[in-house]
Length: 379
Image (cartoon, rainbow, N blue to C red):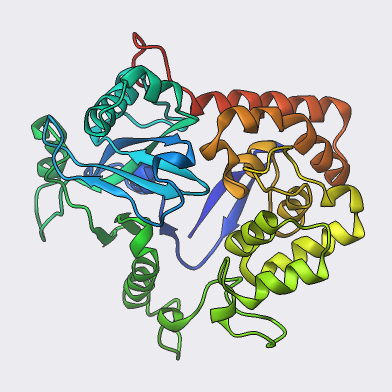
């Protein structure tokens, strides 16, 4: 068993050998399944959902949000405080697969129209307040096959599917009898731990002759990285923004931190915030804010931390997948491209040509956080 993979930075292809293979490719799971066995039926129905981000004052400083249980066309809409801003959404419709899905103006208009109607405000004003837009693809399960069922049944579901309202939103684990490939399909972020446990249970049951363990699953009571103090000085309950001792400690030990920056670090990194501050101490130039706006309390040291400890390899890795700035305010993220690239380039020893290429790639990627023109088709 194994896979042939490609290093996206160098282009080098090589083989990885293993005793078993687990397919957890989200909406692309069917593509992986058919690579192993072309006769496999289609089981995943991709469904797109968009979110928009508005300024924090739409939900004020409260921890409360808003749920509209029934919009004009019967859908559900929510608005919640998130990352110092307000997130609103979402849509739910069948879509084609894409590595870089991008919202259309029509999709955003539906969200802003429904919100404006409920909030009794001008829709254009609300639309002008949108700071970022993004689109994701949910890997919904269109069909759970029964034993000995004809493959054509599952394959035909796409033609019969007129909406995503009734597809399965839990997860499903299937083991290919021919190849032994274990695939975990569907699911969502809120159930990721349970999905992982059940996937390994299925793998161990299907491949007893190859893999085994004497331990039962321990992840149900395991805290995530950053939630436990490595020094043992503080209990997890003190790792709470605005009310824990960790925040007090950070402010005391790091005079360069503002109140909002200390809170941000605790919320984002937990006890690992100490490591970010250590970088800032060693490199005083990185103790400065990445953005000269108190509403965005990111430190330059977070860029270097992302490279050294979070495997960030591109500017978009940092701006979108580590800091999440692109999701909060795409214009602010675009303004940071040069500085983030400079810090990363120094650490990773990028050549001038590679530095420019990374900046261009980031600029292109951040465009996906804006809308496609109203007349464009969704990719």
